[in-house]
Image 1 (cartoon, rainbow, N blue to C red):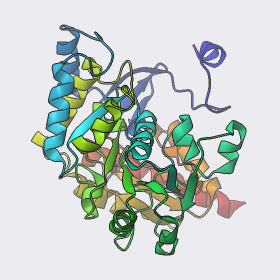
Image 2: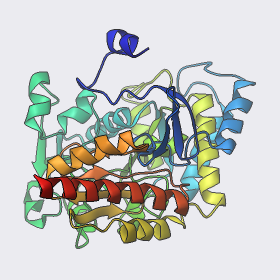
Image 3: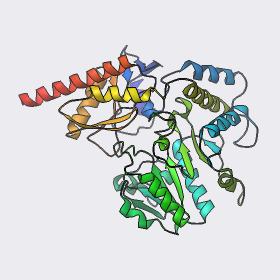
Image 4: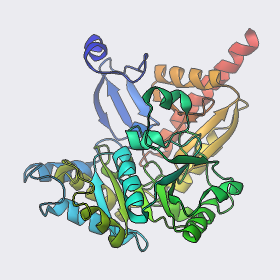
Length: 398
C-alpha cells in the first residue's frame, strides 16, 4: 500500500508522514500496524467533533437513504442545505444572513474575493503578510510568501499587503480598495491573535473608504476558540464571513456568508456570477447541520476555555518559550525549529499526532478535537514533556 501511495497518489511533500489508516474514532486514529494514535491535530482542525461523531454519522446515513447529488448548486430546493443555512443565519449577527455553500475553504475565499470586487466595482484587495487562505489561484494570490508563489506567477493582480496588528498600515486602505481580507487568528504565521482592537479598527477604516472587510474563519470557526466563531471575541462583524474545515466534521466543505443584498449580486449581471456543481451537496449539508446542532445543544464550546487552561498548565518546560493561540487552537513556540521538528516526528513514534505550521517553523500545531477529554489532554501533554525532557538530556550529553 505504501508503494502504491507513493506511485499513484500525487504528493504534497517529499516525505509524508505515511500512517496507513484503517479506522478512526473519537480522539484516536488507528493504523494498519496496530498503532493507536492520540490525535492532537484533528485533520488540521477539520474534525472538531472528533472522528465519526455518532450524530453526524446518523445524519449522513439518513441522507444517503434519500438522495445524494441531484442538480448543480442553487437550482433545486434541497432541505439539508436550506435547513443548515437557516440555522447558521440564526447564530450570526446582522447583516450576515445568506450563505453560499461550496466545496472547500479556498473556494470560499475565491468566492468572497469575487463578491467584493462585484459589490464595490474596485479591484484592489489587501491581505496580511504571512497570511494563509488556501491554494486555489485566488487564495494563493493573497500570499506574500515568495518562495511559494513564485513558481505559479502570474497570479491574480492588484493584491497589496499590510502587517497584521500594525495600525500604521491603515493608510493603504483607500477608495481604491475593494476589500481587506484577514484571518481572525493568523494560522500559518503561528496562531497570532489580533491585539488592541485591531480588527475593529480595520473595519472602521473600511467603512470610512467604502471597502469591505472579509474575515477568514476557516480554522477558528465552529467552536475552536471557545465561541462559535472567532470574531465574536473581538467586537467586530465582517461584511463577508468565510467558513470551512470543521463545518462538516471531516467532509469537504466551505462557505461564504454576507447580507442578502450583497449575495444577490452574484446571481445577476452576470447571472451565474459564482457557480459550483457540488456545493451544497445534500450529504455534506446534512453533516453540517448535525455538526452545528451538536455544538449548539451541548457544552462542547463552553468547555473549550477549561481545556485551553489545562493545556497551558501542562505545557510548561524550559524549551517552550510561550504557547500562542486561543481555545483549542494552540501553538507551543520553541527555541529552535530543530526542537519543533524533533517533537513532531518523535511524538508520532510514541502514538501522538502533532503537526507543523506553515511559516513559524519553531512552533508546533495543537488543534485536537473539541471533544477531547481531560484524560486525553493529560496523556498527550505528558508525552510531549517526556520528549522535551529527553531532548534536553541528549543535548546536555553532547
